Length: 480
Ligand code: ZN
Ligand code: CU
Image (cartoon, rainbow, N blue to C red):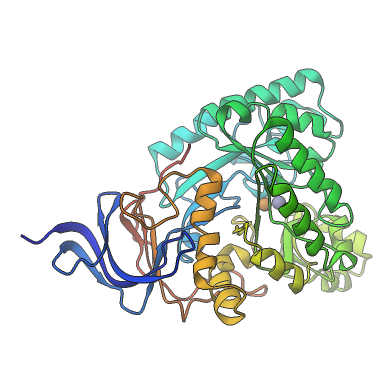
């Protein structure tokens, strides 16, 4: 009798996520797992797909996101799923939506305003947030970090100073409870106002529970320009003092006179990787994006406004045009726009390519889903790595591109049985056209779905059929 499965994908070019060479094969799904990989000629399934001419890869894992509120009921995962992403790591840059044991100040202190408006800060404990994700699952999987900026806002009335001994203890306890509830690590955003005044000793103490919970430390470093080497050393110190892995978030070099220095930083990272666990991620663009900061404007050749509470009509405008339109100085315009978000053109192609091609670098979008005119990385990151960087520029083979967004990432974040196509792994899968995959999102028209992604499955369920979400919500809150 013919073997029968739930889903059978026939004749695909399988790229399994480990970095191994592609092979032709059939993949069968039973329940939420991959049941068989190989030649399944005689087999049958409830749903069969002809995948000849297409690549089947593990579902992509977005190593760096701000999707904390997108995972909640009503959140739109189209920017992710349309690129083939099946799992996101949230809570980055020191900003997690939980825990917030007190009423959040009004206005919400930047950069926490990037991930949720005031009404969204309702999860007193991290476990309250997890309970909602489990009761009303999203369409895709997520794993979450607990943010040090969030913890500071949660326990400190005044942020422009180091935390007191008592405040450090409170933050450490909140971090411990969050890890107990399933957070996979702690993140910092030491370049931002809430985290900036924290000495590294404070960070190490708050991160102490990571040791027992086998968690990792992810950091948007204090400096990504002139003082980047000091910041890297500070990051390594956190990992070495606690014996935990560290992840350098969105590694980049900002400011014209720092362009080219990725040679130096990657050399230092490679050297340190021989004695401690160091990971890094990067997004495939030469412009960054965050809240509107005068010091960031200084480092950019061009600044675009992504949203503004002070003067909403300027969303999507070039700051130089706003200055002319308002008839004020640049500082005057920045002040009137606040609070606001921006895209900063401040990196070199050479650095982005070198960092992206570095063997240990994972792909993470750093997409900002709540921005009115978001940086195109939200909708385009994975398609751009596969299309522009791997296929068109030939920066690395497809197998390596996919490994950077699947197997490498699952291994670093401890996501068991994910990021790989093999029997018994979870059936998170992306079927795409390697010749046609491309980002269509641009700086001027950023909310555009990628081309070339045909089908996406999460835990065995189809969530994307080529041009729309299926409506299924098979996503899980992942912990390790
Ligand atoms: Zn960041
Ligand atoms: Cu970020």
